[in-house]
Amino acid sequence: MPPIKSVSLSKTPASKKRPHHHGDLRVALIDAGVELVNEHGADALSIRKVAAKAGVSHAAPAHHFASLANLRTAVIARAHLQFASQMREQIKLANKDDPRAIILAALKGYMDFAFENPSLFHLMFGGFEKFDDDEEFTRASDLSYGVLSEICAPLLPGKAGEEGNQILVWSIIHGYVGIMLNRNSDQYEDADPAVLLELIFPDLPLRDPA
Amino acid sequence: MPPIKSVSLSKTPASKKRPHHHGDLRVALIDAGVELVNEHGADALSIRKVAAKAGVSHAAPAHHFASLANLRTAVIARAHLQFASQMREQIKLANKDDPRAIILAALKGYMDFAFENPSLFHLMFGGFEKFDDDEEFTRASDLSYGVLSEICAPLLPGKAGEEGNQILVWSIIHGYVGIMLNRNSDQYEDADPAVLLELIFPDLPLRDPA
DNA sequence: TGTACATCAGTGAACGCGCGTTCACTGATGTAC
DNA sequence: TGTACATCAGTGAACGCGCGTTCACTGATGTAC
Image 1 (cartoon, rainbow over the protein chains, first blue to last red):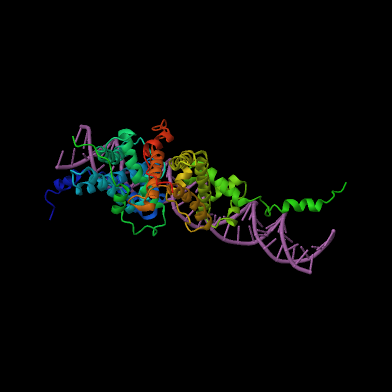
Image 2 (image 1 turned 30 degrees about the vertical axis):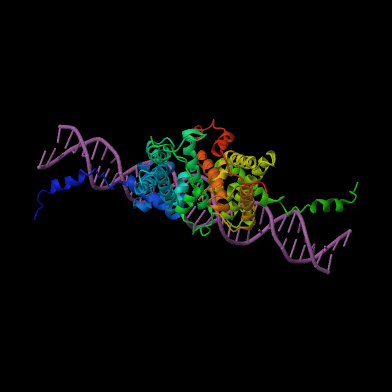
């Protein structure tokens, strides 16, 4: 029995923008990179391992990433998307009329991301070579920084001005996370992040609601 | 003319504890490691490069460091010594009766070290494999942490208790430094660290002097 | 609809490199007598 | 003081490994006609 309309059937999946061979190798390689880093550390990211994990030959990634630094930049960009979205998800759970609750929620998302993906966090902020002017990267990292500036907007400007508040809040959470990640793992394992955040931020001065 | 007392002359330098061949290769290798990291990044630390920099064969370090992680641990330990001493030097310049000035001074030392040795700073806190229970390492890093707990002692305990103050102060400076190091270098090059510190710490609540 | 051709993603072999580690060695130093 | 010996830091060759990168290729997809 010959297939009826086999041509149109094969054309429909083609309209899904599936490129020539692999589904979307570029995306698959970045996925594999994120997994590799989380499983074996920031150093473990390599073109050959990423290719193996995606099930292609080690020469295939060259068609999508000109160098290891390009791949790394893309993985960090992807990490920023997840980072921002994890903060946004916590914000959604907070009372949207309580700016302080929103800040604490976002910072809980910040900490959760870092503690759940410590190696990825180190890759993002640990001084690894990346292309800071890559468009995909700047778009993604702007999403993260956007969350932070957004939640700080209701804060009363301090002596350091608007930007001072942002840097202060960001410094505290970034430093706290960095310190905790650097400790021997079992030393603070019973510390409850939410409680610690409350303790660290006892009274944030807010603007009068306009 | 035969040398008089040549024997005792040659014994005197021997009493300087100079080991067999090299002066003190272990120390020289750590020196070379610090230089390598500062010059070419935290990733550039390798047994072979360190040996080359110290002018010995690449098999020589094996007599002093069982593995790369051991060498790295020793380099980080050395970095902590410098880190602590840089904070102590700034503290010496401050009015010793002004606890707030002492805190700001120590944090200036903290920032100066990080900005002058960014790669070393990343090596110390960037999640690289090291032996946290190495005695030389714990002794050195305890010196750094000792400075931080010392300067925080005069602070009024907050809701998070004594330890909360320490974690808060440390988080702020650690996070601020981490964020600045992660930016494109020229973005904040005109920021005066001392001024920023003053802005970030407008009013630290101190204990009554007993 | 069918055919010829261009495009280009993925292949597999090969390259040279730097790496950590091992090994038998050598030669200077320290020690016992 | 002099001699024999033990110790051990440093040597140089060799190992196998994973790496990024290159290359001619092949074969599936997309397009022009």
